[in-house]
Length: 225
Image (cartoon, rainbow, N blue to C red; front, side):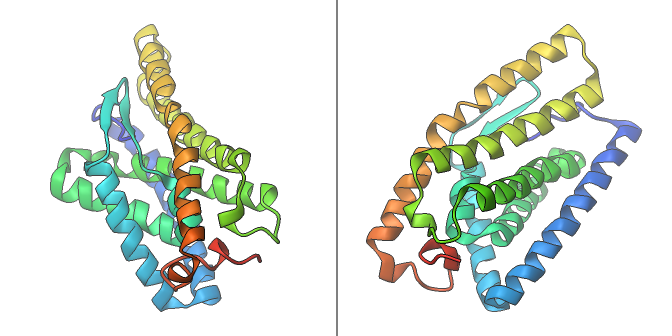
């Protein structure tokens, strides 16, 4: 979902710094909450795992340019369900930075946009999860419809932010509209795959319950609130 270089340029980049700062502050609050609930050691361990997984997803899973951005299978809802919101947020930002800094430095001017596009939908997905998943339900017991709702919320948020950056940077010309529409249609295909991945991973975690009760996973994976 990397915004292509040149979509937003010049002084318009200042807005991306502001949105990234706001998303970062929200991420810091989530981090503080996670430390309070499960301790710093658990947060660090889960964040290292999510960072490695995000970087791997960026580089190894299929990804291809479509219109104004790229389609990636980041499996954010899967990470959220396994590791929790704060470690997922940290992993997304750290994985994105490692990839941009070491492998794709031409993406660094777009870092604020890409960070915002990854994190804000995660925050929305976390809020949705609190509404549609009953407090007495462990994540391993989710239904397909719940996994689908979480994935749709996240991927829809990504598409909305990419569209915002594209229109903000390039306007509403026919060519840009076609590029945004093409990206949105391609990216929403992820929704067909991600909920199935979520349920497959959760089923695996449930079948090896004793191996996934460690602090490397969110307590909510097997336990109700």
